[in-house]
Image (cartoon, rainbow, N blue to C red; front, side, top):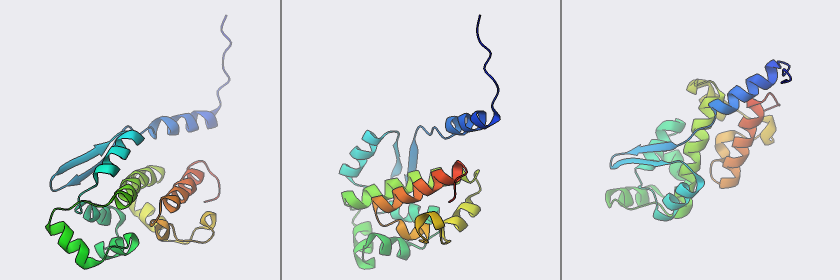
Length: 162
């Protein structure tokens, strides 16, 4: 005879959130087509290959940051960006990785904020106690910074101080 499991609404909510957060793939649409990946190994392939410079405009739109600010975060001079975009060049591996991680973070953040992008955008621009008083978008310049913002979103999702 099977033992009936006692209903726990909290664990049900967490289980439902975990299932709804199980994203299977990410995508960036650039003028040349779609760039998509579903795993860390796919991401590594894209990082090694390099993303087109047009992906910076996609990030600019998704983060609600001007392209100039995105270039500052990545430490890319405007003239270099203009020339390489015109020449259809690819981002270096470090910048490609940052862009891919941004996409994953942005998708996760919008999900944490129940698909309310405006609220998430406001959260990215406000000082955050769980980040030592830093503004989340100020940490977008490194893989570690992006991971810290993601950790803060995880804490927020599960009711911890964020």
